[in-house]
Length: 277
Length: 133
Image (cartoon, rainbow over all chains, first blue to last red; front, side, top):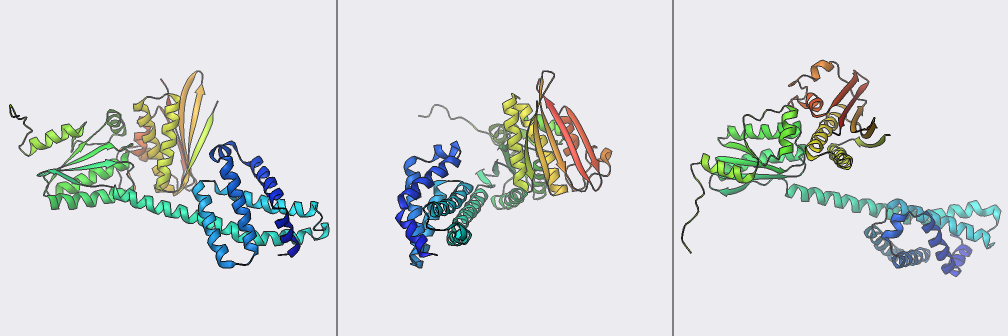
């Protein structure tokens, strides 16, 4: 990096920042301006500027740490990556324009300067993109784990009766889990009746129906009976429209009715106690 | 007047995105819960067909306004292997993937208008419309 450029940037720090903020704001859409308060915007801009200056002072280790911290902060602020990256590019152009305006660099050598400016800021934008990407990756994998955890539990409510409440979208991965948990659970809990509750499944298409039917058939093979409960009226209509045959199932509209039926099937019923206080 | 929004189907989660889009548009247009369920289910079937058989494609939702009637049209387009015998796939119980074989005939029953265009090796174009009553 050329020394005169560094000196120039240092000396015109506040002017450059102000200009930069103005330019970035011009381009930011309303959504961005609303999300970010003036204070945060200014603070971050100053912090960024200090960071850039630090990168010139050759304390490599400190710079890397700060860079990482800054990237993480920017990601946490929730700014779109395009906004941050285009902000960086604007900074390069701004410094470049300013150098020429102030006569530090002659017109003939501007290309050369632009290139070195670009090279100087490349690691910064790389680091920011990298942090963004890894944050997203982390979020996605965490959510995947969280999703798997609430995937398909089989709950033994009373003796011989187990319930599997399904909530959310059923994809192939979950369908596999449902089948496994159902069969393992039926055997280990010694269930005679299993209730699959689909109250929380937003869409029952042929694929979901297919998986549920298969699961029920498998349950039948290990010697238990399967009931499909929580069929909302609109789901009932779509199932009929689709022409899915659920005749092999005992179905009910609510879990509660299903529970009563399951007790009946295992020769029990719920009795209210009288007169005991 | 037509306003179109599209979802590119590449993996299983895009099916959910397409469904969500369809449900929101249906809600906006004033469809009741039963029709909302029908529309989302139809989208689910068509999007899954794209994912299963073509690998990738587009699912678009059109808002229609023709002669004072409001409607929603699902357009599913892919450049997959195509369907050799359309009559066959419109039969209940026919499936090449071990599924229930209720998908396409089901979509026809779920929606009001249904149109399918397919040439082997060129892809498939399915349009299904539901009118607001």
